[in-house]
Length: 126
Image (cartoon, rainbow, N blue to C red):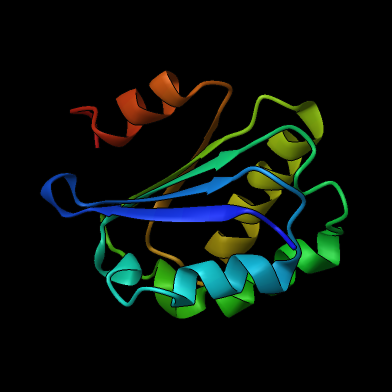
């Protein structure tokens, strides 16, 4: 079973998901659906430990974008992925492309560190 921890920081309008062990698409969908406030937050931060999404395929990534279609309609919102692992970095970029094709109005960014991700999430240039 995957270890995913979701946190809501309402004061910053931020939903954070930390994935620390291998996760399936169903695990990722469940964590988003676990708290209705998740989709209300304009900004999302996904922190991915090395290799945790290594079993996902391109088809899985597209399926996640379709599953999160309603959660991604955060006009002006941003989703940042922290992916220090090259494979995770590529999958996160692929997700952003799929989400755009599914009609998401949020912006997507992929970063190597949490500090870089937060600087982008809360930066002035929007």
